[in-house]
Image 1 (tube, rainbow, N blue to C red):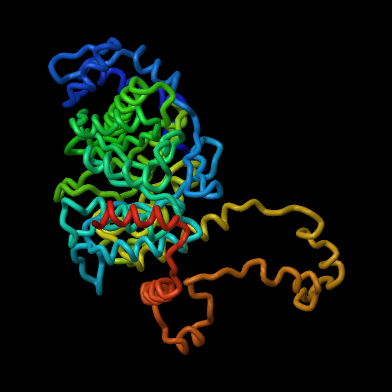
Image 2: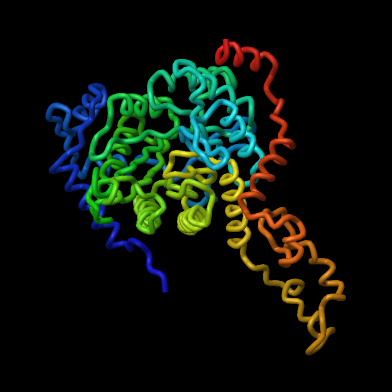
Length: 464
């Protein structure tokens, strides 16, 4: 019998430990504006170190919404983020390298466009994740080129990179071009704000957070504390640090704009005591993700967790095992938002189109496996068995013909007998995935739904 990572009492203990950290140790916030806001609402500010009362955190929890809808390009593309809604899946996010011919190389704009095409075609991915850092584009225009590639390459939502105020300005400018001056009248901008463990918020991180909140846009605060280096190596101590930093983000969001949408996010894991590297394919990571979802739900807020993650450097058996077990764990916990749902290798550092295709296959399989079994007269088929009798066959029955295609779906998994498989070339899964990438790119056509005037303005702003 499986047991949850945290029960009710466990959530209370982690929360209590985080409150003690914030009350006794405090959190350093490097932004003067955020410090003034916290001080004005009763936090104890000593230089850049802020100590939080339990009351201040309780006030934030009283105003944060349990769910909201993020508007899409068209109403049918709206996405619900709520405790009672299906998970929203986003593709890989931000790796600087791409796997090419078994070796890693710096990502390019062409690689980013490949990632956009694959995510656009996926029936599972709803948010494009800025899947590759296009290092061949000069850094001063990279955010503009990337935004243009996303908006013109797919009509799905995309996660803008907004780690700086300049990047946030580019994101809001692009949204104003596409949706008009009142684009922020409803939640629309997908973004991630990272804390700096242990117990710190950078100046730009806090500034971006405050501006997003004041625009009424969803604020997803994500913590990636490293057990053994930036947080205790024990899982409970690591969770207490992660939870404390997330509570700081929650308070800042709600002080800036009470009722602002918020996502509680964590991708923390333990560090290798051999080389110091973060291990996101380790079994401890799966337990931490489950506990992260439980803690966020215990607070009553939507949760973001990591997805198909692995420490492997190629799409091999290790990558498949670690990724499948990680994504199954968070989906089983009814998480609201999953970043890195497909395509990641090397502990966040590398994108692989072949890995994307394999992960997408796993997502489809998990969704099929999670569908409830239909129980009615047609599905129970008692008349079919009465007709064929003991020792008979249902192959010739009309019922079999009616349902013969029920289990058919496009798949890259091999279901053929050995001799058939050998006769077709005997390819392994990575080789099949590589062929599927080529077929997908050949079949891809970018959407053409932008108004011509909007498209000209977008081209001029991003590429001019």
